[in-house]
Image 1 (cartoon, rainbow, N blue to C red):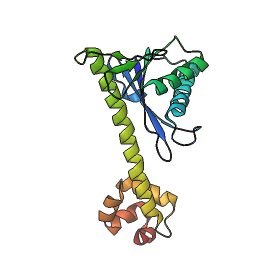
Image 2: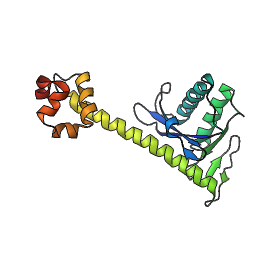
Image 3: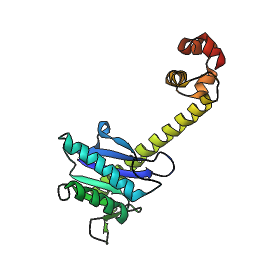
Image 4: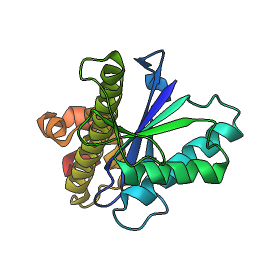
Length: 201
């Protein structure tokens, strides 16, 4: 059981980190998680990585859930040091192995060793690590896009006087996007929010 953390959505407001889980070398999607960064001011990859690992594994320990055999951190020495610090503080260092993947995928960093291990490009191990990292990126980016498009839709509906949060939520739940809402006829909108609000929309 391997878990991979990706910090690619740390920039900007409402930063988010992602965690994907592989069991028996296959994605275990029900165990995937997004983490809104709570305690870190501004874009700080290292502090964010530490926060996310601390929250993830404190919870697993408290709930008596199985811990992974390996944590893969997307990033080089800095991110790996932050991860090691988090595990140290939780008393889990030595219980879970942890490595960092540098930007060039074949470089793997181990705690306390500044020289990376280079994995053979044709090896099965590299293929699994590559798949893990690609999946963590995909999961993070999809979440980021969904949040952004939802935010844009809400802000467009915000501009309509007399349309409150409940109405906005009902409309977006039913029509999924502002584009589909625009294409809907008055009767379809009235079914969701009633005729008076439908004519305002």
